[in-house]
Image (cartoon, rainbow, N blue to C red; front, side, top):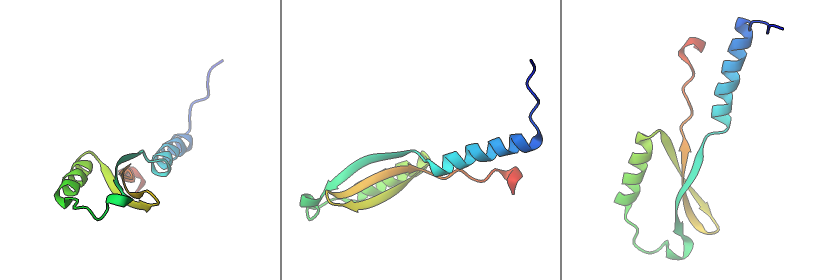
Length: 87
């Protein structure tokens, strides 16, 4: 039995669903922590700058999150652009 061909609407829906999944479920990775008990120590901002610049080059945003353990630095994949043909 042959499969029915996909309509243009079905193809568009699949494209949109794939794009929406990439937006809703972006890859996230904890890269390092600044322990709360050592926050007052001298942390070098040039190290943080270099890591943020490197993350930018590979397509990630960096989030700095305060929690009970201290500061967490998280890399999060950038939201993909809206495809040109949808604009």
